[in-house]
Image (cartoon, one colour):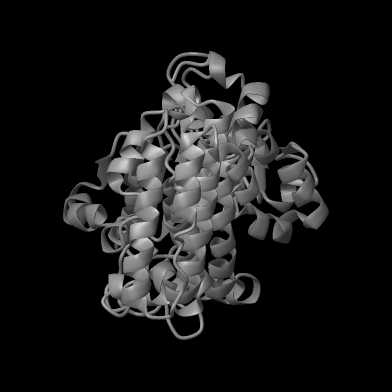
Amino acid sequence: MSTGTLEALAGAQPQAARALEWASDKPAISGDYERDAALHSVFWQRGLDHLATMPPKPKRSPQDQAVADHILALSRASRSNFLATHGTVLYAQLTAQLSAYRRVEDLAYGAAASIPGLVPTQATVAAEALLPQKDKDGHEIDQGILFNRFLGEQATGLHLCHAMLRPRPEAIEALERYKLGGLLDLGTAKVERRGKSSVVSLHNPRYLNAEDDTTVANVETAVDLALLDPDTSICVLRGAAIKGGKYDGQNVFCTGMNLTHLYYGKISYLWYLIRDLGFINKMFRGLAGDVEPGEVFGSTLEKPWVALVEKFAIGGGCQYLLATDYVLAASDAYMTLPARKEGIIPGVANLRLPRFVGDRTARQAVMYDRRIDCDSPEGLLVCDQIVPAGDMDAALQDVIDRLTSSGVVSAASNRRAFRIAHEPLDLFRSYMAVYAREQAMCHFSPALIRNLEHHWNAQQRAA
């Protein structure tokens, strides 16, 4: 909404009059961090206080919603301008001058505490999490603006990528127990030592092993342990068997994001960053320690990954394959990236998929819902081996035997050499900076709700 439109409403709409008064006090950027942070914090909090006095989003009149949209848009533009000048200073403050590694979750809420009003607090995010996606004001978009700036600057972005490649505290705590028993069941994920391999199983059977806020931390912990285990040299990613329904007793790889949870507002924005900067990038790049994980001067703890595609690899499931070293697929399996029907960006697929199948086919998959059968010319550009569905276990053992029979000493070196040629860490950082902002906008777009209702019949599904 323009200021002129607000002025037209102000005579009959007290909320518009208050918004005009608030907007007129927008501070300018002086360049002094402490001064700008203090003045902008007051301005942003006044905007949030004004928004809090308005009816909840479902009960707003069109005029109310227009005022709310103006407050949100002006606040976001102001936050973006502030971060353009002071984002690196804020990041340095939150990380003790880049000497401490903090995950995106810690940075988001650390920033909220450091400069009130810049990004939502945990309490604000928790309150909105109780609402269906369509009824949210999208305060988490401000987190996207924050991480666009943090990742967009090379020094802070590489530091954040490094932080997210470090093992989770939960994995470090469980490592000695896992070394002894060779098994850890985390509920929505499991990791098990089987001979020379660490097998990570995805387990969300009600939703055909879909991804959501209940899975992401557990899968990352399992991936960490698979990589940390000193007694294995190969990692395997597989979907667990389903109990009940159409696929009873059968292994299913992954159906991607839990769209039912997305529709009902149960997927947080930070989920996207935790997932793609976390366990998927760890599969691709390995685990970082105290040394910078750049491919030129640094190194990571890594192992080759084998993925088993059974039934389908949809959305996020297909994205996993692009981070692995060997894909074993059942002859009846297929891959899709239905991002258009969902209204989101399919993780890092836009960066990686063209390397496998070419730009045209990648665009068709992402933007025009093209299905790729694993046992097809295009599918064989992603999948290394196709076997009958009933022969997957024997084929997996043969792959593991072949990959380990002559030793895997050079595997990490060759993986690093491929990455520096095709996706160095700085390229990934730049991609993720854009992804952080654009995915935030997609996540709260009205188009996402329309897509889910039209293509998924989400409003008819139980949360």
